Image 1: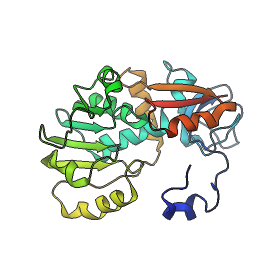
Image 2 (image 1 turned 45 degrees about the vertical axis):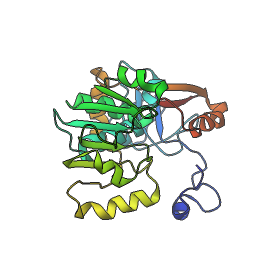
Image 3 (image 1 turned 180 degrees about the vertical axis):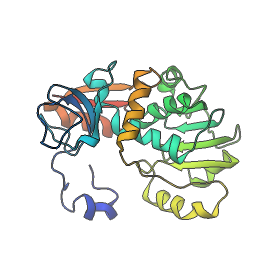
Length: 270
């Protein structure tokens, strides 16, 4: 949104955003389908991803969509895809979490963190969430076994060692985070939150360290969206919505999100 880091402006737009309409997540009712579409028909409720989601009508390939979880509203379903998939890819795929592993989620009350806590629990991990004082109760309610208030305690200064740290906050150095890892633990910096320097350092150093620290890129895939849908319908994962705005007030939604204190997801409705 701000064109940062500047190194990526040739990709996202030099003087202004290349994509005039922002937004990646959608949930709604199919109005029409192309001649090659076989998975959906008009009137079906779906959720998924597309470019330019902040609009009254959007179009996207059928493999970017899945049927809306039956127990979710459209607002709830629209809060899921990008952050839910990024959490799934970070915990299950990059983090290779197994039952009984000790997992720490730094930034547990944000859009990605709230999903990460629940997915890690669904996969059988012992989960510690790190957040601010006002979010301790929320993170505990999401299922975290332990909650650390970062204003009162620094988890990198002694204490338990973790098999996986998913860092969504980017407020500690890589060396500090590794102090909190088990000898064969994995450090996964979330590329959306880590600074460019941290991202590059983690990527280049990971092949040479026993404690892995390779960032990951979350690419939406239908099989993963289907897996996430099953977790949602089973009640193992649920979206956390901070606020909902009408499309006419989308700018206010982004301002609220930009202040860095949103609890879970911010949703825009038409």
